[in-house]
Image 1 (cartoon, protein in one colour):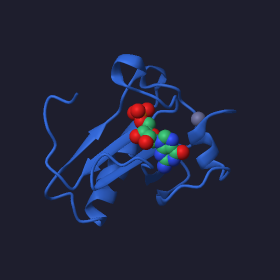
Image 2 (cartoon, rainbow, N blue to C red):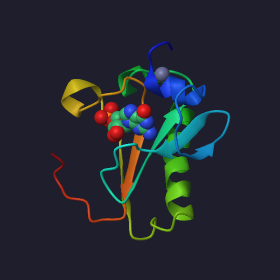
Image 3 (cartoon, rainbow, N blue to C red):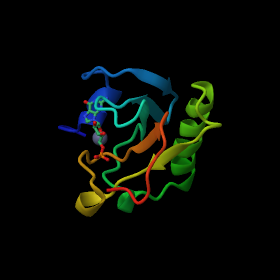
Image 4 (cartoon, helix red, strand yellow):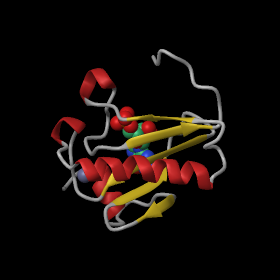
Length: 112
Ligand code: 5GP
Ligand code: ZN
């Protein structure tokens, strides 16, 4: 989709530090990391919010991709947090769904 930052990362117009890619998902480091480990997993098709998501297998793949990367990077055992923000109350700033994976420090609850 035009004017979508994450579609631009998928098509290569905006660079990103990629961690994993297949035909359906892309994972890359968050440019403004909120934890020692912070990456995003996005679908390669444009879906604006999780309210618009219908493909259960794709959402499952995003989660499994995140856990695989956390394992590869050695912080899965200590733990991490997976978050998908939705719309304004959820704090979503980029309208292309993305799963945050945060790790490498103790997370707090409740989130701000
Ligand atoms: P949201 O607030 O929508 O849940 O999260 C959007 C995330 O995307 C933020 O953590 C932000 O740092 C990240 N982000 C925004 N623009 C870019 C970009 O151009 N490159 C990368 N790697 N991350 C981005
Ligand atoms: Zn997009």
